[in-house]
Image 1 (cartoon, rainbow, N blue to C red):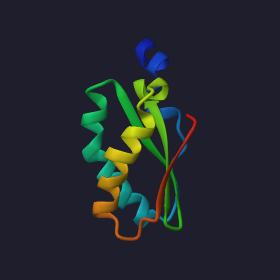
Image 2: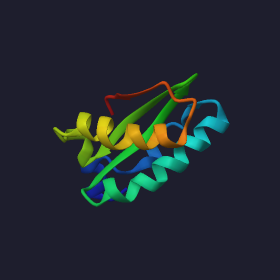
Image 3: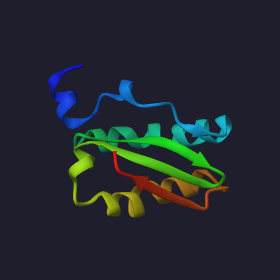
Length: 97
């Protein structure tokens, strides 16, 4: 692991695989993959933790872990994009990294 990855928390190898329905996990990850370059441009990252029924649980990584705009990014950026592509989605939550 590179020292910068360790500081920013961008190394994904240490994370457990997402929990939940494999089909829904794949759907969510396709949407997140489209958003990843936007977050990465500012040194940030978000990863899928779980799909529990119709709720998506995400964890912040990189610069997003300490960013004061996390809630805004979730509500105005990530959640609308997920809702546009996932008709079954009821809620999006984030957890501490």
